[in-house]
Image (cartoon, rainbow, N blue to C red; front, side, top):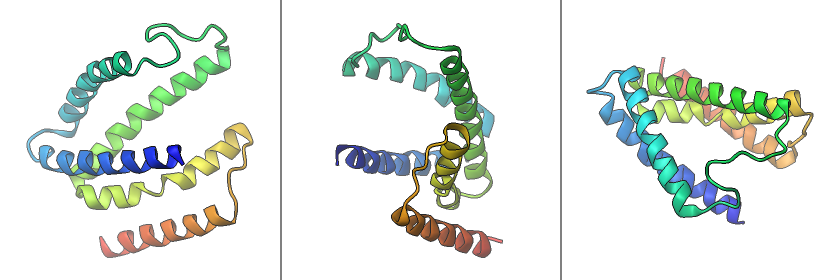
Length: 146
């Protein structure tokens, strides 16, 4: 239950983040905004890391990282930068509500890539029901925003 609560809190904070981004992108270019917020996020992440005191020392890597783990970390970082730019451009070109409603389809891709990359099957009958609702919602947004 704790993980679900944290995920809901993340959704609430993302709601704030996207609404604020929508306003700020009226004054900043998407590139300016992304670079500025990413740079400031690094400092804030370090501060949060020092406050939260994770089970691992803040500035050391686990000793047992493999070449595969390094590759996965690089892939994650590249994907994170690309998605950040894509969502900022999406908000700038449409609005935060439309961009976030379409972006919410990402769980479909999480399941797909978990299976393709790691052979993990995280799909059950309830996730299929959820995926169906998400796809219907994205379809409605896409159809009505043309």
